[in-house]
Amino acid sequence: MLLGEHPELEKEFRIPPMNVPMRLKYMFQYRICTIIDVDEKNRNVQIWNYTRNPIYRAFGIKEHPTFQEYEEFLESRCFPRTRDKLKIELEQLNIPFYDPLLIIEKTEGRMAEDDFWLEIERKKI
Image 1 (spheres, helix red, strand yellow):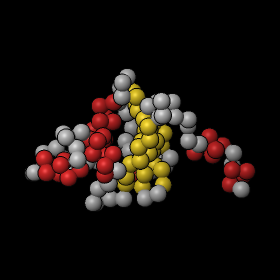
Image 2 (image 1 turned 90 degrees about the vertical axis):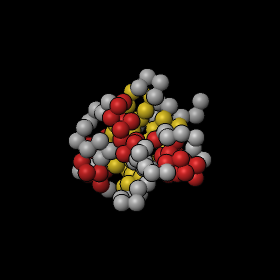
Image 3 (image 1 turned 135 degrees about the vertical axis):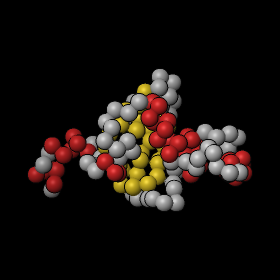
Image 4 (image 1 turned 30 degrees about the vertical axis):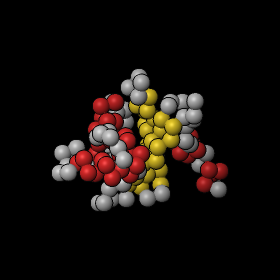
């Protein structure tokens, strides 16, 4: 019904095909807020926001984040690398060293203080 009345919305909310090795979906509860397509080899990041509210977007008002900003975002969804007894935390997750992406793969980037999380999808080769 809604798309029949407003066909322009389909383009705004369509999920693009995955043309990179990895995609992260930044979620709030069970709603997609931002899709982040990542090509780590070439250090490229492209995003699609599915909300107009910058508070719910992975990169706020930023529409074209750099690879460094992507790395900082990943780290913001993990416990800090300066945490006391960091090695114990990593051992509990069965991770050999501090790597935000590895941590997010185990924790989904969930934090005690919010309802945001990340779903990681890798392109099958």
